[in-house]
Image (cartoon, rainbow over all chains, first blue to last red; front, side, top):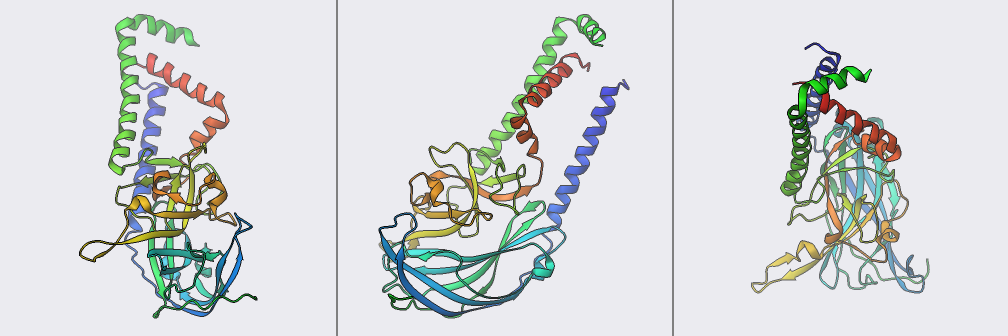
Length: 177
Length: 189
């Protein structure tokens, strides 16, 4: 009964059960932390310029260029099961055709607690364009800073750190940069 | 080395071998049932996927396990991580949603609602890539609900690396299968 197989079998079963229970506990433990830090977001300027599409170089469409200011202290989001934060700034608006749009224009990955105090004066990283080629008559947009907490093991959680208090209008398109 | 085992095998007889084969089969089928049961529960064709590329580093590395859900009324929002499979592409891709576009519908009592989830247009991007995924969509301009396998809800590191190792080194797969089969046959009790 005490063959080598039985011993190996018993040992691996015990070890894998222990590891599973430990991982489960760690995953559950991060649900206790319910930090909800808030920061500030302001939009300094928006310009709209016509440009060429990446995929269809002969077509032109309008692109929006956003300059923004973000300050937030996100250190409370770092607990022992936080691998990294994915921070993203998005524009939320409805266009003239009645489509609700959420467009991410900037993002940043925060991997250490020391880097979690955010103070960025930036511009959009990704192309900001509307489905209908033009921002003419598009109603004002809201901007918000959101985050995704990514754990070492367990469930992914999301939250919002800042939002513009008033909707911000798109200006008329300018031909020259 | 194997002569002893062979002798015991002969001593145990035909019925015992049959019983062991039955046991082995029941292990495999219960595994399959758990997989399919999870698929039914979370409404997705594959409730667990293994990360195969580095395009979501440093969030997900090759070999990490992801747990997915894909409920019928589940709307996607920016920042969500999707697993999608474009017809014509051979492997599913794990990338983050960059843009969502929902048509707004006004019904008879002039209530404003969003169009059905199936009409949602999405654009995705890998955290580790510089540009969005439009080149990966095989000619499509947007990702749609019908291409999506699921939304990433949970994360377990490293465990899936076994399957990657078995794909990279097929000998390992056959060795493992052979040893398991042999053990199942000669093991007593």
